[in-house]
Amino acid sequence: MDQLGSLVGAFLLVFLAEFGDKSQLVCMTLAARYRAFPVLLGAVAAFAVLNLLAVAVGSVAATWFPREVVLSVVALLFLWFGVQSFLTQEDDEEESETLSLKSVFLSALVMIFLAELGDKTQLAVMGLASAEPPVPVWLGATLALAMTSAIGVIAGRALMRYISIIWLHRVSGLLFIAFGVYAGVEAIRLWL
Image (cartoon, rainbow, N blue to C red; front, side, top):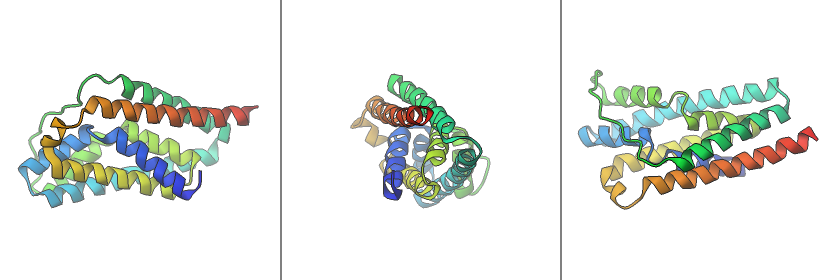
């Protein structure tokens, strides 16, 4: 993929995977109790750092391991995430937690950072960055997560009356599978 293709691919993959996920529900819950702007800033800051870590690890893996090995691992991860997303039968509802920090910004940052550390989308970003240019992957993933956080903050729980989270999980699952098949085909080409 080219730079724009990498950015758009990362955006679509992460946006669909995170829409209705626990991080968006955390943003909805916090925004229902506190001012929206600091919640959104804290979430975006957490995602920017998490994606930077994922892109750095993915880029390093791409230089240490042969491309066919990296693509094979990425294909397997994406196929696994796709099957898991596609088979999700219930919402990822998470209880509202009591906040221990006074600052809403820091509360949102810490809650999102801890909730998403090692999450499937962070691993997906890591995988994408090992096979695609890291800057567009970071930018696309961060924009997607900022957008899902903003939607969570603005729309709140009312949005869930109109959009089925199960179908969003299925669409993201299909997208993960498509990326997994693409990476698998590329890996097979390199192995042969």
